[in-house]
Image (cartoon, rainbow, N blue to C red; front, side, top):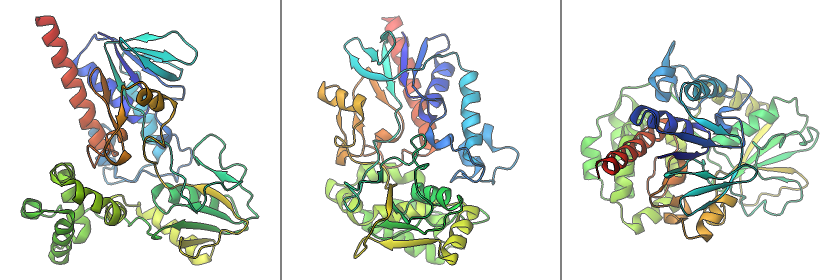
Length: 388
């Protein structure tokens, strides 16, 4: 009854811990060629901060100050501590294919035979926007080891994207004593909004959610409630978040497509906000002229170097080799709108690859809930099998 978990980031580690709690004694094998913790939480610098307060990352991480925006590496240490307390065999290797059985074939080691396989792979490969595609000096993945080291500080650099990843990349480059400017570019030029210094009390959104008949009516309701609630739009957006997946599931295909075209980016910049300290750094560099923010329309990148930080691409085009093999072998298919991956038992997905079936699926609270859900279902299947 072995469970193979592919991926040793937050999704994989939280799934392993949930399985151990639900199914103690069940063999767990985790497969990842990288150091456990995931790329988001390997950021080495103390000013690489989490975009959520400590309290949102789990009760065991909240002390001593649940309102603090702690360094990302601190949460990476926390994840590795969870893993150290979980009986799991760690294979430092790369999964390349899953065959019948299921059997996980590895790049170097012997195959792993399992009863179930959990895909905890993180999001699809990063997208490369059309306006920088094919650039001879393109850095397609800014978090690949050493990816930013070749950036010349005496030449301008264009960052394709203005989201949270792009903000991190911009600050990383700007703290290296650059002589030339950094230019962040996206279709709308929208930067993430800023977390309030003191977290507001959540707004009462029950009636708003119940009356929402479409994304457009939901946005209208959010604006109306935000205008009269003392906590402002932050309190309303935070209170709507737990209902987001139910609202997404209830929406028609046409409404979802309309939301993706017209509303998704606006939702993201309000929902996924920057810590105040990060926003202050960004403002300081903008005020000095070291950082510019532009829209794509009419933008000329000239001879600038280019870093793509536009977020995940769409499947199947953005599939990594394992996901590509799963799709080619008929064991998986691109999920709705290419945002994630659809599989069936004995394969399971936890984390960002459930996007499309779910809307909120990238933050730790949702990932923790998914890990518990998968652990519960596997435990129930195990009990049913033993009883039979």
